[in-house]
Length: 361
Image (cartoon, rainbow, N blue to C red; front, side):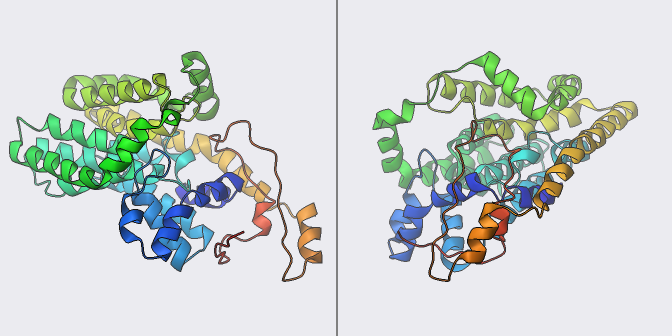
């Protein structure tokens, strides 16, 4: 189903997201490697933006941007493969799927968060989890929330795996050192705390409108799992409190819901821990199937709309244009730039598999 998101996300907001990497693209192009590797884009660390900048420089094909994100989202499911019920819940998640092909760092964040919790589960059971320090560092370089979750995971292992926990904390510190100047600049910038106020009722209504009842269906099994995996549940609660704290402090936008991606993997593991009987496991797998099938009609409806061949103004403009002409596409600003149900048959007149090198105005 993640593959179905790729063509849908070729729309104007995704193209605007792609432009955010512009300063890092320029830095890499001009040989300022150190700046590129430590530069924040807005409030976000550089890893995804560096990867995107490399695509802009060497393979500027838009479908690679959406496809790469869909791959990262699929890897989040792969990370949970040892816990099949958790993997099934994540694979059809009504929160994961809408963001699966975004041209930003959130699908990569979802991948690393799932890997962090999966490695934490292995370490807590006494199995080898040597990759945890590396994944923790990469998560912190992808998103601040990823670094925070890596910290939670490391602290939860101090008693059971003190050496691994210490190495993970050390990796986080070392990874953060080059980013300290950027973090300080963000902290000192008054614009950092300029997001709209927290409005819980509006947020819940927005979440219900976009995600439907599906997340609620997993609530009973997740709460059962909380009794059997309290460390995972505490980590989930602390993550939720951290996100709400950022929104209450006007740092994170309350109308944007991709932060929920950081909550889906641990909750999926709680569901797995809660489904201990044969009946509960069948129920969980049935819920995953129903959740996926329930979202499929809307996905297919949007895809069919992209195939609409009704002539549009852009068709006449492209037909009349000469190679040296510039064709400007104008669209009203969206009411909510985080609503992933929007598509753009107009932008699809420019096939995303066509190379589109950046140009300077």
